[in-house]
Amino acid sequence: MIEAIYSFFADPNIQWVLFGTMLLGLTGGVLSVFAVLRQQSLLGDVIAHAALPGICLSYLLFGIKSVPLFLGGALVSGLLAGWLIQVIVRHSKLRQDAALAIVLSVFFGLGLMLLTYIQQLPNGNQAGLSRFLFGQAASLIASDVRLIAICALVTAVVVILFFEQWKTLCFDPIFAASIGMPVKMLHFLLTALIVVIVIIGIQIAGVVLVAALLITPAMSARYWSQSLASMIWLSALFGCLAGLLGTVTSVVLGDIPTGPVIILYGAIIFLLSLLLAPGKGLLMGGRRS
Amino acid sequence: MTSMRESQQAQFKEALTLRDVSVQVDQKTVLQALNVTVPSGKLCAIIGPNGAGKSTLIKAIIGMQALSGGEVRVLGGAVRERRRSIGYVPQKESVDWDFPISVADVVLMGTYNRLSLFARPGKAERELVQRCLEQLNISDLSQRQISELSGGQQQRVFLARALAQRADVYFLDEPFVGVDATTERNIIALLKNERERGTSLFVVHHDLQTVPEYFDYVLMLNQRIIAFGPTADVFNAENLSKTYGGTLHFLHAADARTGSDSL
Image (cartoon, rainbow over all chains, first blue to last red; front, side):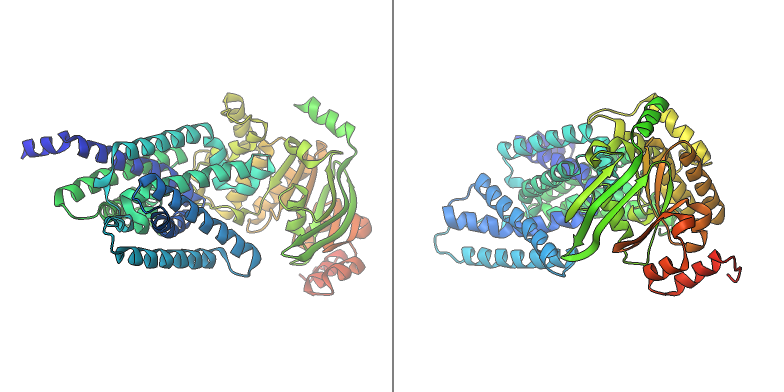
C-alpha cells in the first residue's frame, strides 16, 4: 500500500500534474479573495464560459490541437465577452447581473454548438477537445505547469507590492479614488490577473467549473479570518489543498475529470467552514449576518 | 503639520469655487450650471430634496464624477493638485461592513493619502490612528472587527479615518444617517472643533430642523443652486419652498425656524 502511494508520487508525470493543480489552486485562492470581496466573483464565471467558442474557433481556423492557440482563442473570446458586458450595461437599462447572464449563456451556447459540430467532423483528430468542458489535469505537460508557475509568481509579487492599495480598493473604492490612488490601474491589474488565471485554469478544471476556483476558497477562508492577510493565506491553502486532493482522487480513480473533483473538495472545505468555524460556523454559535 | 495647514489656510481664502459646473448621468442633467464661491473655515450644509444631486455634487467636486462642463477649484487649485488636502466621508452604506478588517486598519487608510505607492504605514501613522480613535471615543474598539459595530460606531470609524487624513477641506455625505443622538452630538462638536482650527467642511444634510444650530453656511440645491450664503441670511421659508417645492420637509423646517416646538 505504502509502496503503491510512493510509486504514485514518484511518477514524474504525476508530479508535474500535482504541482500544476496545487499552484493553480493556490493562485486562484489568492485572487479569489479580491474577486469575492470586490463582488466580482461572477466575472470569472463569464470569462470561463465565454472562452469555449474561442477554443473551438481556434481549432476550426487552424485545424490543429495546440494548447497556446486554444488559450489564445479563449482569451480573445473571454475578453470580448467582458467588453460586451460593459457595453450592455452602459448603453441599455439592463443591470450588471442581467448583462452577465445574457453574455454568459450566449457565448456558452455558441461554444457548445461549435463543439458538437467539431465532434461530428470526419477527420478524427478532434478527439480530446471536449476535455475543455470539464478539464483534464492528466493532460498537463511541463510547459503548461511553467505557465501556471509564472502566473503564480506574478500574482504573488503584485499582491505583495499593492497589498494596501488593493485592500483600500476592495473595501472602499470611492475613498481610494478620492485620495488619488490609481484606481483604474489597480482594478485593471486585478481583472487582468483573474482573466489570465481563469484561462490557464480551463485545462485543469474546464470552462464550466474553473470559476469555482475563484469563489469557494475565499468564501471558506472568510469564515476563519479576522484580517485580509490571514484570509489570503487561508484561501491560498484551501485552494491548494482542493487541487491536491482533487488531482489525486481523479488520477487514482481513473477516468473521472479533474475539474469536478477539485470543485467538490472545495465545496467540502466550504461546508466544514460553514459549520465549524469558531464564532461564525453554524454549529459554533455563529449566526447569519 | 500645523504650520503647513495654517500657511495653506492663509494662502487660500476660498475653500471651494464652482464655475458653471454641470453634470449629466445617463444623458440626464443632474446638476446645471452651478456657480458658487465658499470662503474657507466654514461649516457648510448642502441640503435639497431626494434627487437634487447632493451626492453627485460631492462626487463631482472630488473628481469621482465626470463634469459635462465647468470647473471645480479647491483651495484655489485643481482637485488633483489638492488630493492631500481633501478629505471625503462616503455614505456609510457605500461599503461592505462584513469586510475582514479591524477598526484601527480602516482608520489607518486615512493616512494613505500621504503614502507613496509601495510604502507601508509605520509607527507615526499608527500613533496618529490612536489619537483619532480617542477623539471619537472609540479607542476601546481599536482591534474590533468592523462587522461587530453598531451604526453609530461605524460612522465614528469613518470620521476617525477622515481625521487621520489631516485634510483642510472635508466633504461628508450624510454623516448623521443611522446614528444615535449621542453620536450625532459628538460628531457635530467634532466638526465645529475642526472648523475652529480653520478647516472647511461641507456636509450633505437631511434634517432641516438642525440646520441653523449646526451650520454657519448653507447651500440649497435642486439641480441648480437655489440659494447660498450664511445660514442666518438664506435659510428661510421662501428659499426652502423654492428648493423643496413646498413639500413636507419645508413645513417642518419653517416651524423650526419660527421657534415652534410642534415637532
